[in-house]
View 1 (cartoon, rainbow, N blue to C red):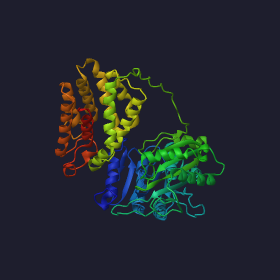
View 2 (view 1 turned 45 degrees about the horizontal axis):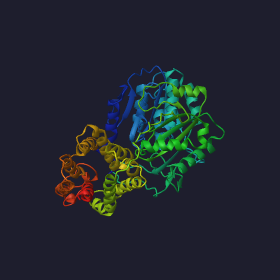
View 3 (view 1 turned 90 degrees about the horizontal axis):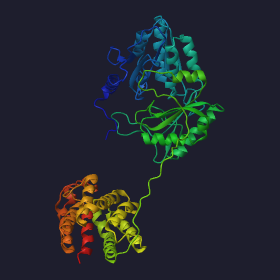
Length: 546
């Protein structure tokens, strides 16, 4: 099974670029019409009067690099194949197309292929008379003594700073100076639970189950250490420790929280909260993310980037841009709470005694308790095997209240109201909610109903409305409906029982369930099996038939 959604391997990047351009909300991007295989995306509003900022590299790191092309950031992005540097000709085309007298700056991640191709393109451009400078992003601190640190998420901060000063009309020398000063201070470290999947490949580089890899590269390169955990708290503590060791006493930090592509929003926000519980958070004044800014296809991991801020740098980073991938930088805030009004107290009728009603309640509860194992076994054939336990839990709760004389037994409406309000507490899940709807709506209808059966049918209708099932859908309704109709018609309990049994038996012949877990089963799996909810109803009325 492929983990990568695509049509043809050879056209993935070209199609993705077209999709990005056609859906850009700013409608400010275009692809240069060059030789096939040269993938260059540019700002349409560029006039060469200012220093051009060009970046690029392998695809698969979206939204980098195309997502940062636009006013205030990049002038052009040069895209290679997935995880492959663009060629010299493509880079040179970009330089020649967007560079005027003010010159251009190449922002390059520190990988061998990128250094070589961008470096040679820069040399060729200079030979043609263009002013070109190149800076390398080396923000990876996972291996402190590495002579060639890799360029990671800190790259987009370089895009932002360089783009800010270019937009202000600053000189190439000034832009290089300001951007390099920022890059000298930025630090990034990442961690992954699993590597990325390449198109056409069924497997990714394996990380042992239950472990994570510190410093895994954004092309799936092995990390520098394997951590014996996938626990979020332990992982972010390790990341925070490494960053603190690197930055020393620096504070007033920007913290960039980047999804490497494969973590869910839930996981990223959880990890963010974990990070904000570490000592690193005491140094953080501003946050960017959590979000996907520099990805590694679908790598299940994240990276943290820190940058000490001053007013000048913060101004550059917070300046508005017209790009799709950038996220605003916001002050770090404490958890916010707002007081809420307490829910109004539900008033119940005072407990009262009625020997006949007490006996009925006791028999109903006992029938459900005695049928627990039988119902669970039946439910295991068509559901998740807990119908009996759920109903028995509710029955034991009511039976306990009966023994403690807490029920308003002499007031049918009040008893229905009590059941509607209380039954969800022990039962929980959808079963408890459905019965609560039944009893609550029955209580509300009781004053205007002509008899108990009519009020119960009104409650059943509410159960149908909210539950989404009806008679014939293979649920407890198939037994409740005919039983309640018999009660409304004034028939005896024996006739009511027969109606419930007949309804429950009819579910054996139903080949499709339209509600509950049984709805996921085919006709063959359901054939001959009675719905457990309907059977439970028949067992209840069996106790009352005499």
